[in-house]
Image (cartoon, rainbow, N blue to C red; front, side, top):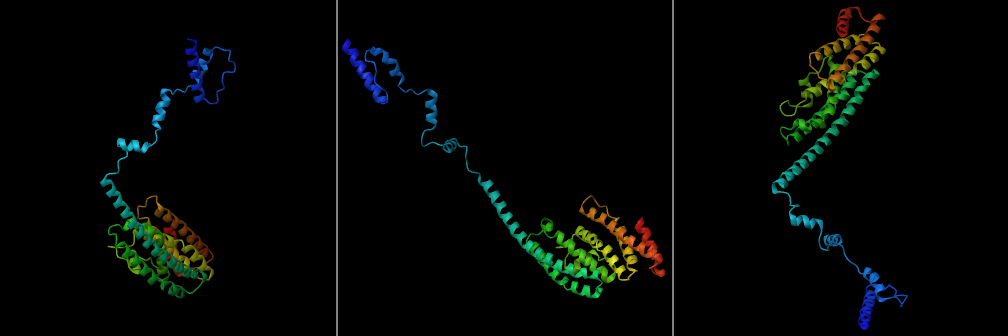
Length: 309
């Protein structure tokens, strides 16, 4: 019996050393062999059920995407969805290339308008009006060619004029303001909408001049009037305030016929009121000093009354 216990003890010690090489042998050989059973049993490693489950989930060769593909959660898009977005991509690319062409022409228009504007500024320096207009008119044909190119580009997308209209809107308003100011310097009258289209070679049926762009351009033109009046008076042209006052009064009355909303056009029209008031002040000053002609007093007084109303 003792030999059987001894053999079992030796077998247990050898097994524990093989599992835990760093475990020291029993320092006290006098102890009973049964005193080593508890620590020896604690050296054995057991896996709890949660640990077994976690190791099973982290088994090599498996991934989250593989699980989704097996369950059918990552199916590819339907062919109809692919076709729709492919059409979207094609249309957006065509629209982008079209806008690049339009923008290239608009940059040319902007550069030409700067030349025209710089030439017209000479009229404020007491230069002869015919000389100033001659240099400015030379660029009208250039602008006409650019607008013809814009019309050709927009023919590639019929029926979508207002989709791309914003790309040349501000430049067109500036062009209209310059044309109307040049026309007034030459004739003393307002450039009509149809006349502006004719100068730029536009067609109302295909590629025309937007009405709001025309009206805003006219409002921009009125901003030049007060400065022009002051400079003309300093050169001795005392009749200029009367003419400009009559023109702005009629123009302001015509704008009052429109039912303008609270937008950019309405703000520019409100600015015309201040232009009219500044011209009135210059005219009052000239009249009080007795510098106006007696033959023009009736027309001038009528313009002042209408402007003050």
